Figure 1 (spheres, one colour):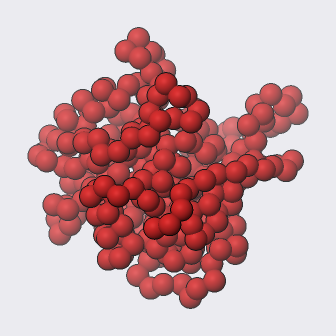
Figure 2 (cartoon, rainbow, N blue to C red):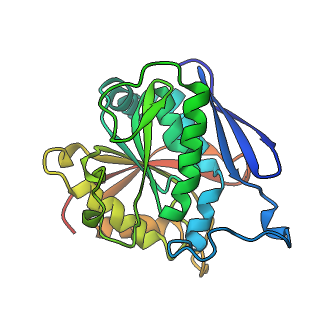
Figure 3 (cartoon, rainbow, N blue to C red):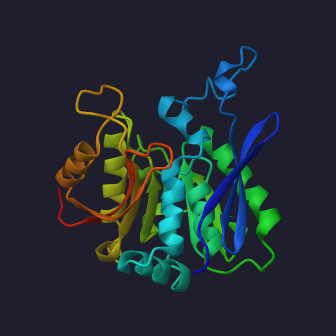
Length: 280
């Protein structure tokens, strides 16, 4: 694939817009204005939503790990990146994104040719839906491909839909109208750096990987992570802690790609694969 993934920003009174170039497509992803919390007149519309928490609030921003994951998928030449493109863009195996937030990761994969179900808690899904609608109008010119998720729309060469998925609830109780268990590919970016959220993320990924007998042996999660915590942190966890939790859940985590962080030059964004290797 030619070119690389780049991001430019603009804004209006309501949103910060991230103009994401994924050759040959361009996405416009709206996120919450970065200085909203300092505005004394601002009232958060989701403040009293039952699904709205500190973790949910992070879904209204665009995170560096999502862009790194798209860069890996789009142009990395490793065997793992080529395998992703073969399975998702050529064979059209279904993809579920965990913690979609603004939807930048799932929409990027859809634009390139994947069939993606974006998921998050209900309070965040409103923003995901609006970004899907925004990009359906701006970049979709082809007939909607068949084989996508129920109620998905055409985005570039692929399709994208959205559905709530609360990690604090059993996946088995959240299988309608789309069944996330039927996906053989999972993607997630910067979803497990909060200490309270990491165990829920691990359990959800493990459940998705071990479920669905017909595809369980080939299921894989592509997970982007940037270290934020230390062992002394009370709010943030560490990658070693998350990997340990995955091991206890019967999963193997393997680093397959890394790039230096543009926001924190002394850190890296790391892309991992997660596979179920045994029952916990």
